[in-house]
Image (cartoon, rainbow, N blue to C red):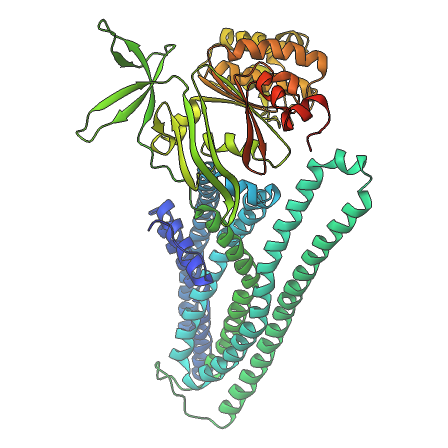
Length: 634
C-alpha cells in the first residue's frame, strides 16, 4: 500500500486522521469556526465570576450601609455582561452557519473520495463484498459521521473549554473547594471509562451488524422472484431473523450501557453539589482560612458562585459523556469509510495506449485525434520515441495458469489463439473456466503463469482502460442504467451520434421493439430496465456493444435469455456485428457456434478438445455427445 494510504486501525488513529482530513478540506473556515466555538464557550463560563463580584459588592454595601457605590458597580457589571452575551450570540450564530458548511461539504467530499476510489477497485472486491454492505458506507456510516461532526465535535469542544475555564476560575477563588470538585470528577471519569468502554465495543459491532443486515435485505430484494418460485419465504424470514437478532443484541447492549451512563453521572454530580455545599457551609462556620490565587477571604460571595460552578463543571463532564455514544458510532463509521478509501486500487503498470491512426502518403501509420476506422497500439521505446502496431485483434494464450485463490488453480496450461477476424467458441459445463478465460482477456483478473498476447503485445504492458476500450462485451447478466434507451445504447461510446446509436440498434435487432415503446428511443428506463423483458434488455446490451464498434467482441451467453424467435433476429445481427472482428463466444446453445473457426471444449479448467464443428463431430468425443444429446451441460 502506498505511503498516502494511512491506517485507520485504532480510534486515536481514526480521530487524528479525520481531524487532519477536515483541516485539508477547510484550512481557513475550520479554524475560524473553532475560534468561534471557543469564544462562545468562554463567554458562557464567565458570568459566574461576575456573580461573585455582584455578591461581594452587595455584601460590602450591606456592611457599610452605602448602596450608591454598589448600584453603580452592579450596573457596570451588568452592562459588560450584556455586551459579552451579545458577542456570545454572534459567535454562536457564526459557528452554527460555518459548521453547516463544513459538515455537509466534508461529507460530500468524502462521498466523492469513496466513489472515485471505488471506481478504481478491482472486480475481485465486488465479487467478495455484498452490495448492501457497500451501500451502508454511503448511508449509515456517512450519517453517523455527520452527527459527530455537526453535533458531537462542537459540544465536546464547548464542554472542554467550559471545563478548563471554570476550573481556572475555581482555582482562582478556592483551591480547597476545587480539590473536592476534582475528586468528584475523577470518580465520574472512572465511570465513563468503565461503562463507556463497554458501550464503545458494542457500538462498533452494531455498525458492522447493521451493514450485514442491509446486505442481506438487498440480496433478498434482488432475489424475490427466485424466493417465491422456490417457496423459500420461511427460510428467508429465518435468515433475516438471525442477522436482525444479531443487530438487536449488539444495539441493545451498546445502548443499555450508554443509557446507564447519564443517570449515574447526573447523580454523582448531585452528590458532589451537596458535598461542596456542606463543605462550604462548614468553612464559613469555622471562619477557615481560604487558600486561593485571588487572596480573597472565604465568604458567601465565593460559596454561592462556587456551587454554580460545581454544577456547571460536573454538567460539562456529563455532556462529554453524553456525546461519547455519537463519537463512538461516528468513529466506527469513519473507520469503515477510511477502510473503503484505503482499499488497494486496481494496479496498472501498462504503458501501451490505444490511439486513432491513419496512413500517410508513404503508407506509414500516423496518429490522429479524429475517429477513424483504424486503431493502433502506441508502444513507448527506451529512447523516448514511439512505435505503432496496428490493432488487428490477434489474441493468443501461451501456457496460461490462473487461480482466484492461491493453491486452487482453475485454469491449467491454457494455450489457444484467435487470428484477426476469427470466431472462437468455448463450450463446457458450469465452472469449466469459460467465463474465466474472457475475464483474463479483459484483465479483470491477472494470470498466475504464462502469457497473453494481444497483437503480439503482452496485455500486462497495455493500459487497462485502453485494453478494455478495444473490447466489446455482452454479458449474460444485463445491466441497464437509469436514463433513456438512447443514453443506454450510447453508454458503449459516449461520443456516438443518435444516428450511430440507431444503426447499432438496427444491427442488433432492437430497433423494432424500441420504436414501439411509448417514447421510442427517448423512453426513460429505471430499475435496470424493469419495464422491459429480459430479451429486450439483452438486445439493448448487444446494441450498446455494437455502437462501440470494437475490433474484438466477447459474447458471454449473449443469447441465453432470448427466445428462439428473437434469437434468430439477434443471430442475424450478431453475424453482421462479428464480420471482420475477432470474436470469443460462450454459449450453451451449440447451434449458435457451429460456424466458429474453432471450438474449445473445456472441462475443469483444461481444454480437452479443440477444432471446428465438423472436426469435433468426427472425433465422437465430448462435443459429439453434447451435440447429439448423449451428454448434457450442467
